[in-house]
Structures are given as structure tokens and as C-alpha cells.
Amino acid sequence: MGYRVVIAGATGNVGREMLNILAERQFPVDEIVVLASRKSLGTEVSFGDKTLKTKDLDTFDFTGWDMALFAVGSEATKKYAPKAAKAGCVVIDNSSLYRYDSDIPLIVPEVNPQAIHDYAKRNIIANPNCSTAQMVVALKPLHDRATIKRVVVSTYQSVSGAGKEGADELWDQTKSIYNPVTDVPPNKFQKQIAFNVIPQIDVFMDSGDTKEEWKMMVETKKIVDPKIKVTATCVRVPVFVGHSESINIEFEDHLDENEARDILREAPGVMVIDKREEGGYVTPIECVGDFATFISRIRQDSTIDNGLNLWCVSDNLRKGAALNAVQIAELLGREVLKKG
Image (cartoon, rainbow, N blue to C red):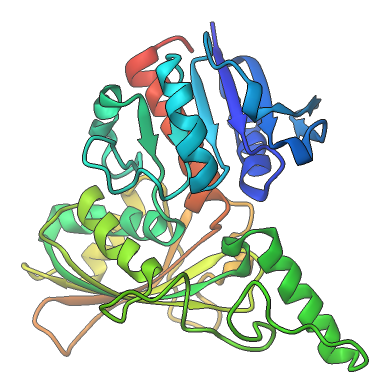
């Protein structure tokens, strides 16, 4: 026996990817329904070899459905997630709305699967920010061995993290550079993204950090360990899919780079590609469509007593969003609902 599953926001990039991954991983689905706003009503989406037509999120009755994967943004989530949860449908939310609520678990299944049992407080589970999700998969096994004190991370985040409008803007601006007759001024981003990098993702806070940087700090503490200090600089780069991160880690105990490499090779969700030769590392274009978080460039940091550097790459539409949500659904089914 399988599950009755709802996908809310099925016409967006993440919603479509959720459907792809559910099919790829053969998630035990007895019945599935795809929901969208009224402007997208009737749009067809694919689920394996099936074609599904979207229904109206506004009027949908969640009673009798087991779980709902939400990819609709914070405003719509605020309106519809409590409605679903009250009807007995467990919500797995991809927005930032509930991530910092102490009553709602924030889960990366490879890192803190035990938190799944806290879902019952509100019948809602939060999916972390894309840049956080891939980083904590790499941090957790190293933290278990040598205890992380401090993380300094710089991200190189693809335009798909800003949705379809972000990808369209990069595409249109790139074309306009080769066709000077057309001009595509910044709209989704603060400055030109084509052939450029932008050291701002989300809004600025009073501290001088952007909200994206703040999210990485707070979410890492909630998912891995509240004692870890995190400082982040988040940068948007002209890459369509795939987030990259340069991560510097300071430990309480010494951890040799070779041991770190061995630990990460055995870690769930991690693939180590780390050869000290030309091209012996993974770039974002190579991780597109893959489930893994790739780790390269593992090396000692000689400027501090117990330090390591590493390079971390992942498909942000997968591990950073849709895949993590599906993995939470699998964990929920396996540990709690136990139907599939």
C-alpha cells in the first residue's frame, strides 16, 4: 500500500522536479494530485509516463491525503499549509516560512533524521535553504569526528535558485550581449548577471549580512549543532543550475585531510571526486541531474591549528530543494506513517 500525495506548486521549477524525483525513486504513490494557482489551472505536468492536469490550490480539500509537498513560496504557504495540516495531511514545505519556528523540524535526512518525529507538533516539516542543504551534508560526518568550531563559506549560486525568472534573465541578457540591438536591463537581479557576479542574494539586514547569508548561519545551527559559528558570503553567478561553495572549517580536534577524505567517501549523500590533477574536481555543470553532493579540493588549512578547506557542488533544484523534500517524504513514510 502506498501514499496519497499532493504536490502544491506543480508548475514551477521545483514542483516539476519533485514529480520527476518521485517517479525516478519509485516513491510508493497510490494516488497523486498536482495543484497550482488559478492562473496556471489546467496546466499539464509529467509524472513518470503519466500526464497530470493541475487543480485549484485555493479550493482543494486536503482531507484524506497523507502528505503534501509545497513549492509555492512563503505567502501561499502561510495561507494553505495550516489548512492542509489541520486536515491531517503532513506538509513538507520548501519555502523559508517555517524554517526558524522552534515547533517545526528543519530536516536534511542524511544529517538529522531523528528530527522527523517532531513533525506532530504542527503537522509541518521544513525543507532548508538550498545553499545550507548541500553544505550540512558535508559538515555532519566531519563534525561527528572532530567537532566543528567555525565555518567560513563563500557560495557561488546559480540563477535557477531565483526561479524561472532568474534563468530567463541570464539567457536573455547573454543573447543581448551578442545582439547589441536589444537591451535587457536587470529586473530579477540587482545588476547585470550575464558575464558578471553579484555579491547579494536576498535583502540586506542591519548586520550587513544578506538574508541568504543569515539563513545559512541559523539553519546550520538548527540542523547540525547550535554551537557551530558560521559566517557566509553568498554570491550569484551566471550559471544556470548547480550551486558551488568554498568551505573553510575549523575543528576542535585535528583532522587529517586523508582521514577527512575517507570519512566523506563513506558519508550518505556524498560523492568525493578529489584528484590533484588538471580537472580532478567537480564543477556545477557536471552535477546537474545528479542526486549527490560532490566534494573536491579537500586540503589542510595551514593558517590555523585544526583547519580544512573543501569545494562543495550540488544540483540546487535537486538536493537544494526537490530531492531533499522527497527524501523527507521517504523518511516520513519509513519512520512514521509506514504504509509504503
